[in-house]
Image 1 (cartoon, helix red, strand yellow):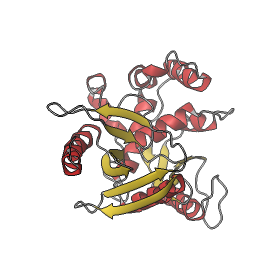
Image 2: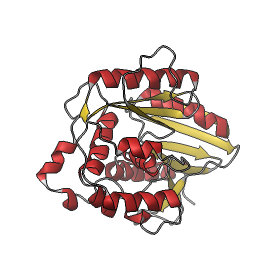
Image 3: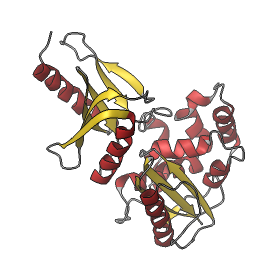
Image 4: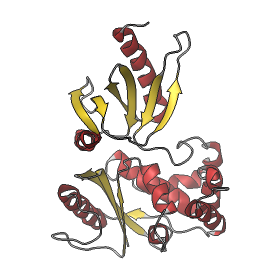
Length: 285
């Protein structure tokens, strides 16, 4: 049986591979005698701390340690309180004994990994989707929100056939209806960044996050938008956009209607949330 140090060395190797392939930060997880990797897009320390707060609700014991990279944190977990739903893939590197090292994503992936269908989207006109790339007040993930939503709007049918092809025969009514709707949806205007909309979104995301509030009512924040979407618990731009588009459990499909509405400007902000770890606000105009 391999020693703990051997397992950690092997785990670190797999972590680098996961980080390179999926562009996710990876964390060390100890659960009893099992060493695991936890992956998630938490590039800022504040998100990692919020995630730890959430994890402490699910585990009897949890610790945190900073790695060499100041933006990466390592979680040490023991004694699970209750099941935490995660999508798990077992990775066994070549040349090593077949003991399991599990890569567990904090949020299960909605569909194909971003970048899988590069060839299908190689037309230079799709570069316009990255409309917020030069906005220095946005984080990388916030810029990606513009990118993924604009791709959907620029070519709904192609997006459905590539990134959401797994929804084609879904038994879930919301998932299958999204696939069919995108097949018929006409292209929409590219959403451009708007600083006032960003400030509106950031204020609400910050205020909601600090209080643990869920919803659209504002206290101190000024309302400057025509349509608004709020999402809780996800930090990946690709996941946030697809979750809003599917709009599972929302009879009116209000989030989908806004994301596929005739808006031309957008402001987004991703902030820590007291109850859900992270929350995202998208304000449209």
